[in-house]
Image (spheres, rainbow, N blue to C red):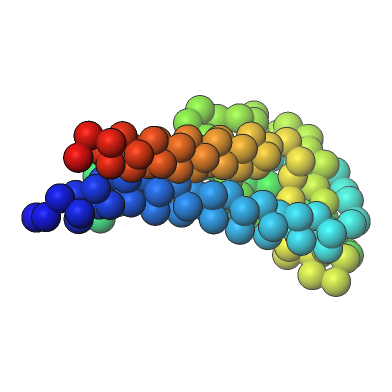
Length: 146
């Protein structure tokens, strides 16, 4: 491998992964903001259950998260929805009351403020910026050494 490729490859990987983290943070943040705009009606729902959800990666390793199952009534219909927001430890107790915001035109679409996606999105954004800074610093350091 030539020196020019080495100069760009290592920092480039950090820059690329950093951009991915920032893109994920921005995309999910934008999606959550659009959901907040649409979900203007609210009702009091309950945590029907906390489910342990398994996730497998491409190497076959399995990790687990705890996802709430919310039960709420909207437009005269009862809904029970498994949250896509998972935590390492159960965040809620079954039977706990929560405020559910839903889309009056599509009550299947909802969000629960207590899930706190904002913290997760900030972490992704900060990690992305740090990776970009590391990649940039590595690029200039390698260029200086060579």
